Length: 291
Image 1 (spheres, rainbow, N blue to C red):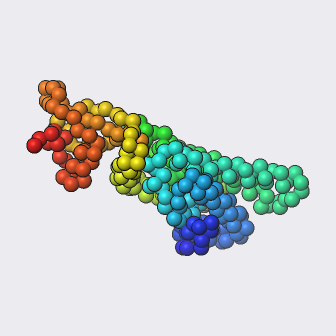
Image 2 (image 1 turned 90 degrees about the vertical axis):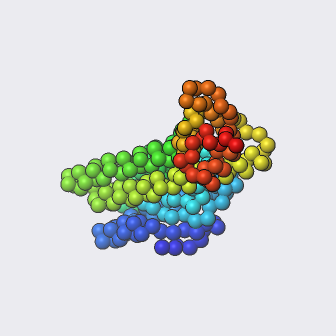
Image 3 (image 1 turned 180 degrees about the vertical axis):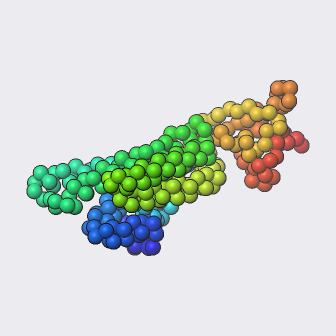
C-alpha cells in the first residue's frame, strides 16, 4: 500500500506489516503499533538521508516490521563501501532515538506505557538489524565484506540463507514464548516476514551479478584503470562456473590451460561476459580462444 512521498522517496507499507498493525489493534494496543511504525519509518529515513549524502538515489522504500527494502538495493550491492555506510545509518538512528528517549525520561517527558515500549522497540530494531542476514542491515554489511572474496552472487546466497536460518530460529523461539506466555503473535509473524524477505533477496542474486558487470564496465571506461585479479581455468570449465569468483572493483584476467595443464592463452573479463551474454553459461572457456 502506498503511503505517500517523504524526502523525495516513495513509501510503501508491506501487506504483512499492515497485518501486524491489525494485530496490535485487535489486542487493544494500537498505540504501540503506531510507535513501532514510527521507529521503523525513522530507521528507513536515516538510510535515505545517508544515501542522499553519498549520491545514491532511492526511488522507493517498502516498510517491513524490522526495517525496509530500498529499490536502490541492486545499485548499492555492487558498491560495497557505500552499502556499508548506508546500512549502518539505520541502526545508528535507533541508538540515537534510544538515547533521546532516556533523556526524555530523565526530564520527566515520559509516558508510563508507550515510553518503555519506545525504548524497547528501538533497542530491538537496532539489535535485530545487526544480525548478519539479508535483508537486514547486518546482512548487507556481511554481503559487502564477503563479496570482495567470493563474488556478489555467492555472497548474496549466503547472506540470504542466513536470513532464512534466523527466521526459523526466531519463529521457533516465538512459538515457545507464546506457549510460555512471554510474548505474543507478533514475534512469529515477524519471523515470517524475515523468511519471506530473505527468500526474495536470494532470487535477486543473478540480477545483482549483471548489475555488477555493467557497473564495472562503466568504471573501467570512466577511470581508465582498475586493480586486476588473475584466475586460472581448465579449458573445459563452463562460463557460468568461471564467473562465480568475479568480485566488485576488480578486473579479471583468465589464464586458460588445456587438459594437461599447459598454457593455451588468456581471455579478459570483457570477452568472458560478452560470450556469457550472447552464447550462454554452458560454453567452455577454451572455445573463446578458438578462431
